Image 1 (cartoon, rainbow, N blue to C red):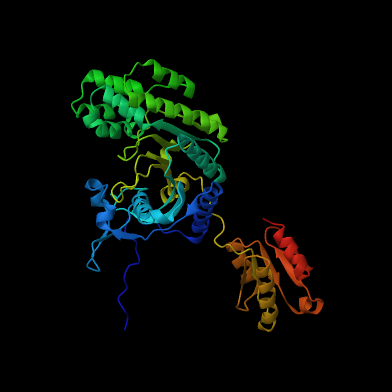
Image 2: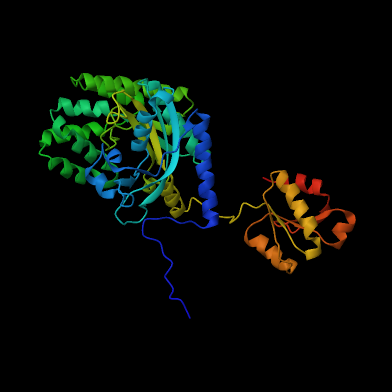
Length: 439
């Protein structure tokens, strides 16, 4: 009796990779992890599931529509939609056990019920860092140095870390007497790159703001020049707002300190149009773009917040952090042809099987190679050697070791270099040296 077959398929918004792509993705993940650790960030991991009331305390609205809620145990539970809210809960819950400033990194999958569109995912990796428990803006300056090292280590040369300060923007709103709609104005400004000046102007006009004030806002966010020139122009505007003045001083200090942390001037700069639409940013904000591929959009963003865990504890916990959406970044880079998948395995050596009677020796050689940290796999079926070579070639395994009658007699192995076709008989120790010399 033939069983009815179910079509194998994925729901939209979920990414599944072949081994050759997963290898590259994992390498990127590990590169980011190592870079974070080099800057003294400690790892944490929080459960994928949280109480819904904990997740949505700061959000609601659109976020609530995107959250995946679970109806299983009788509790109102949801999959986490980012790593910031779980961090807030984590810090509040473990406050007495943590040392502050608390430097953490977290690299996990998150889930959002995104609208179906190309390049938007419902399940994706976020790679976050945060420093909690300090208001020192020198920490704000260190964050771009982390971003710089991450993207350099990922192989990028031409990128820009754009920085701004929300106090400047909020001070401007205060000065223009439109603080009641500042959130909506900042969200509109944050869309300038994607929607253009005309559409953003229409969005701000819909808030009932006068044409004169709209012009001042749009002229303001288009101020250009070197960081020193922009700071000078901001000071010359004569805007009477203590918040605005504090923002200028912070932004100036951050800009001057970034260079001292090893980031070249060409890789960062002040951009007054960077607003970051999220409500909880209160100071420095960041966005990073790949200059040669603007269509990829922001590849890393974040900022400073006054009080991370205000909904969960009376302790005041200021901090600053960034997030890299790795799944989207990987997808966009692959789509742009910047990622080339080559090897479908991490094996460096294939132990070929000439005859079952040599299996014992093959197993012993494989064990010796693995003890020397050489990724090795064994071809267990005694098939034609040409088929085994073809297998190694398809998977881009660089070396094949063959053991037959002659090798047994000489107490050696034949080592075939797949890239050249060269084959020679050597001792196992010699084979190890040759293999280890090839990175």
